[in-house]
Every structure is written in C-alpha cells, then in structure tokens.
Image (tube, rainbow, N blue to C red; front, top):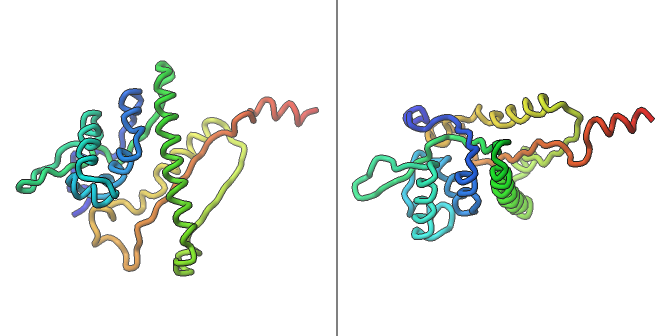
Length: 206
C-alpha cells in the first residue's frame, strides 16, 4: 500500500503557534511522531514496542499529540484503535510577531539536536560491527560557506526535500530495493553566530 492510499495525510504542515510547538518539546512525543511518520498507522502498544516505552506512557503522549493536531485516529481494527499522523512532514517556524514562538522553536530544536547527536554517536560507537560497504556509504560531513539569506533559505528548502526520492518506501515495503536498510539523515543549515557579512567585509577592506 502506498502513501497515496492515505489521502488525509497532507504532505507538510507549517507550524508557528507557540503552544503547538511547545507540545513537541518532549523526547517521547518526538519519538512517537518519528515512528508514526514511518508507518501507515500504529496502536499505542505497537508504538511502545517500537520506541521502547510503556503502552501507558505512549497512550498519554499520543493523546497530547492528538490534542495539538499532530495525529488523529485511524480506522478501527476490531477492538484496536490505531493512530496516524495528519501531516507527512512538519515545518516548525517562529512567528516574528509572536516572540514566545521563537523560544518554543528553540526548545524543540535543542531537544532534537540532542536526540540526533545521541543516535549518531550510537552508530559510530558500533562502527566495527558494520560491514565495510555500509561504513563507506555513510558520511559525516561539515561545510562552511558565504551565502545571502535568500541563498541559505533556498539551501534549507533543498535539504528538506532531498530524501523525497525515497518517498513511499515506508508504507509500501514492495518498493524497497533488495538490501535496503532503514537509514537516517540529519542536517542543519544556519548562519554562524557573530560573523555577519558587513563586519567581515569591513575587516577585509582594511
């Protein structure tokens, strides 16, 4: 079954409301959203098995995600009540006219950064257990460059869609090529604090 079989799942949703953003500042809720984004639907028990939490804890946080509009009930399976995400992706952005939204985005970003750091460190910690072909296929890369705000925004949009070529493989295993493994990509594009273009340019002209 392909992602198109789930018409209620919109492609992406931009979220600027501070209260809704703050609702994501919890590691279990982020893990639940990650898992539900990878599957068509899942019950609280299935989520618990996937993320290593108790069903009771998952049930509570799933209800919170529903309260803030991130997930909804899917069609019942007999006595089971599965959940599904409303949007395939989320774009959390602060609203310049609502200062508290900036603090909310920062809280979620810091938690997300820590989560991804621990995940990546876990991978590199067991690198000697990986086949060489997978080691060679992985990457840890950093880049520095000069860019305008428009160019940086364009790069950010490109990063957000760079894995679109693999769309559909989560919900339809038949589309996965032989030997495919579940993989993760984490990228951040941001201006370097304290290194504005005008001040740097002034120094170069001296």
